[in-house]
Length: 310
Image (cartoon, rainbow, N blue to C red; front, side):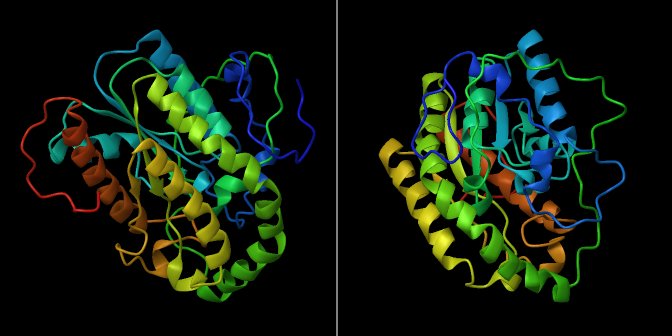
């Protein structure tokens, strides 16, 4: 079955879609409307090739230790230092036997998150479902039974960061606020119902596999955006809270609590250092707290207390 463009409503994903949804053309990267000046080491679709390669490796060697996934678009991709650094920080905070994978990738939809969950090994797992305005603007996925091409051999170590130190000046960031309202907000409104209907399906997919889903807000440059995006943010946040209540899962929002400054961002939603260091640290606390709550695995005493809202 094929879906016509911009047709609203939920879709129940067939099994054959699992492989096909992980194929994303380089053109989707442009839809994020990210500013130029990309890092030389990051190539188009590197993030999606990484997701496919890691999933393939987990299918071959699932292991037994718990896994944490972070799902989301390019904003999620940029909000941790690296998987190795993230795992090491979680270990320092008291959970030494956890595999942490940042699966943030350009224009990622909730439907593609369902694919990730369905392909993940059946081990204790926490799925951080990153949410922001960008989660409601990706193109609709077409139903297909096509098999995804095998991941290409990596040319070197994966560097998840397209945006390095030094962001755009505030004089350039400010016009991006209005640009999103003019160009992306209409897309958000047009596609909102479709994507919003898939969020509960993603939560259900996690539950079916015995995973623990947690809805978590992704970074936003509040010093620049201010209240300009209050309407779209209020709409999707209300939907996320409703899903969290229905399934009795956490909805975590520490966007304002970290007091990030504009210099922590490359633009409006993509973190650079030291912003991503601060964000990863809070995510690590969140994970240790939830591991204890869910009794996922015995962990050693934590050296520093986790924030109450994590």
